Image (cartoon, rainbow, N blue to C red; front, side, top):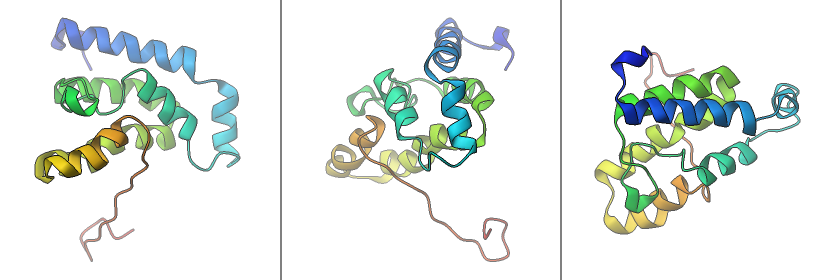
Length: 136
């Protein structure tokens, strides 16, 4: 993303995520992912959560930062250099969390969204569109 399109807050986030990628994720970890020695990147998710990098768009009361979609995409772009598996793990809060945030009750948000953003729960998406493109 072109930096001149980003707000100062979004530019700072971009720097923060780039630093996270360089300093927190080792090449050894990536090799283990490639070799299937790590089947789910829990360590990565926990590190993201510790830095407050999960659920960037979501309300602060659930562990998010209440930032923009642009901020979320900017962070995703930086995480993307780590590969598809970690990129997918990074964006999953935006996919699964969006439904909870938009349509969940307060009780559901406290029970599922907050611990999910905090890295304490794992979630996945399941969908199908016969003949529609997502029926892999």
